[in-house]
Image: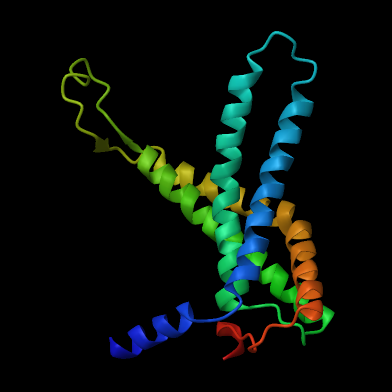
Length: 189
């Protein structure tokens, strides 16, 4: 337990969190903006529909997918495989692909947990509303987790170019503004 505590303290004290965090936030902003543009273009011909409600739902759904991805991308660039200025381009691309994979995995975990939570339902019998205790019928859990897995694979493939671009831009930034202390992650140990 003591060794685990020391390791956690060492992880939290690692340098490079600020720039990696800015990169994660930038990815979330780009993904939400992309979702908003897609929603706007798909509803251009839909005159008379309730577009403000569509945009609110679109923002919520975009944030549900973008925030976990951005957090996973940030954690990967900060703790697992930071992109340092001394790396070469193939290593930078590999670490950016790894960060995209970790972001997709975090997205899968969040969506799968929400799918399992959604499987809790109240009884649909005639007295079901009188006793609103949730019960786990499990009918939608497997399908929800499978849907989350397929969605995570889709997230990985669709966001891979953005992740590689963000990794390369971070590398260029670090080459022009090298950190005062060397960066190393779990993959470097």
